[in-house]
Every structure is written in structure tokens, then in C-alpha cells.
Image (cartoon, rainbow, N blue to C red; front, side):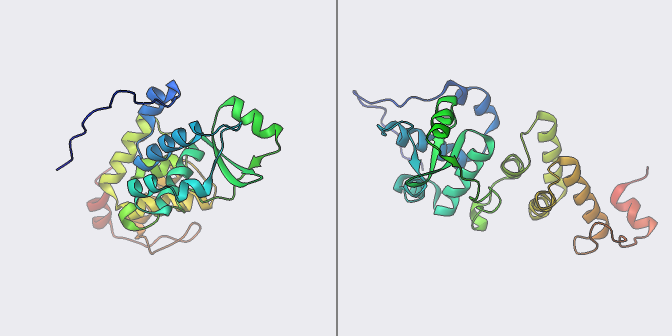
Length: 223
């Protein structure tokens, strides 16, 4: 049973939060790790006196609150990777090491003026997924590795989730990323090919495994 929260005491301090988090981003972000990393970074950044208010990567990965909330450093890294790929956070190489900034125009301009370059060698959301128990849902995987979701795409992903094993969808996304073909159409074609050929049969450019007419109709129905 969830413990009852007693309420905020008198004198509670507040942390500034961008209004967009309560509008478009509230609709788009559906991964809990991404949300928790974003909120914790906002709090940690607010404690900084330096400009820009950069939070070192090691602070976040070793942060006790985040580790209790998410379980493992890999899950923290995955949440951060999702936020960077979405564009809400900047990952930069500062003199103190890799750091994260809230992606505002002022922070981006200050980082550029200081010579802080984008640190792009970090793990992608797919690479930082971690143990099976911490696997993200397919919507987070798509947004973290392919692009933003539209309502129509979300419906197609729901349909795919009902028709294919999650590991197939994850593998298809991974294949699309490896070929730099970041579109749902490409991913859907991979899944359709695996449904017909079997996942262990055939690669792009090879002849598909032949199936009989009866089996094809059973799988796909009459045209």
C-alpha cells in the first residue's frame, strides 16, 4: 500500500520549472525515467550559482535520490539519453567533464561562448536500456531513437504492440537505427517481413522463405 503523503509543510521552497513542461511536453513524454531525470536535474541546477547552471554527469548517475527512484545507474543514463534526444536537455563537454544543461536559448548561447561543445558520444536510449526489468515501453523507444510521436503513429505503435512481440519491435527499431532509416514505415516493413519469413530467415536483399498459399491466407487474410 502506498504511504500517504502528509502534504507540503509551511515554508516549503519552490524550484522554477519551464511552463512548457506542463503543456506539450506533458502530453509527449511517457517514460517515467525521463520525467524523473528531468525533474531532478531542474532541482540540482537550481542549487548552482555558476552560469550556466550545469550539472555534472557523475552527479546525476551517482545521485541517491535518482538511484532510489530508478534503481540503477543505467536507468538514470537511459532517462538522460531520452531527454537529450528529445531536446529538453543539452549534454556538453565542460572543463569539469561531461555535464547536462536545461536546453534554453540562454544556456545554449552561454555554453557556445565558453567553448563547451556538444558531447555526442554518450549512450543512446536504446544502448542505455539496462536489464530486462527496466526495459522502456515501445513509445519511449520510438521517441528516443526514431523521432517524435504523432497521434496517428501512436495508434500504429499500439497495433504493432498487439501483433508482434516486444523484442521484435525493439530489434526492428535497432535495425532501423543501424541503417540510419529512422521512420516507422521502415520499421513496419521489417516487422511484416519477419512475420512472413520468420525473424531468423532472410536479410534485406535475400530471397524470402517461401510459404504456401494456405499459410499466407491464414496469416494475412484474403486480399
